[in-house]
Image (cartoon, rainbow, N blue to C red):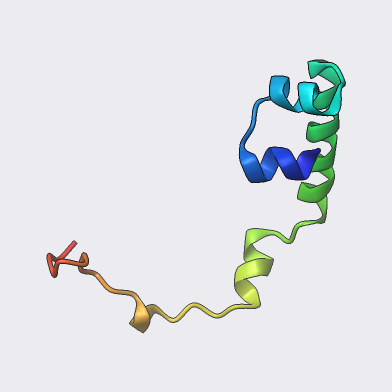
Length: 68
């Protein structure tokens, strides 16, 4: 159910109807899974630490060549 919510950006009312549960139950289930996923996710510092940022590859111009 949480995957459907995250993938389709659907409302709790539509989730509840699709899974034949109440909106409150849909909300509680989705929020509890999101909380668990957030607890297991790496911090931003950890995520960026494993992928070095190369500033020389960043452009300071828009796609039409106008400096930003």
